[in-house]
Image (cartoon, rainbow, N blue to C red):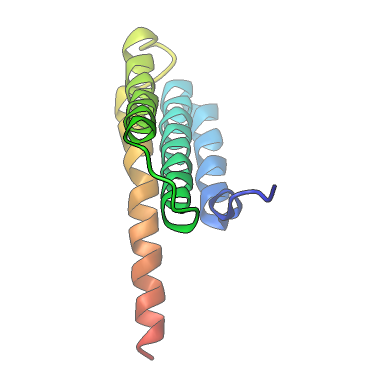
Length: 119
């Protein structure tokens, strides 16, 4: 089984490195960003695997869709809930930033690829 291409993104490695550097200064901000970024990555990888199964293997079940949706939603909920359970160790603001930064990174990367195609 090959690894997912999103895990090898250079930008993702840079974001994790920045979060570890921030954790050296303020642990709650850096660790919260790691939690949010990891939850967003897990969510995205699970969603892409679901779409690959749906499109390329042409397997669809309503039960599988509901379970997958609930599981992906619970990953996000656990990331935010961890900030409420351990506010001294995890900042809620950095968790939310970590949840959104992956999607923003993917949109910006897609825009840059489209801009390069027009040239």
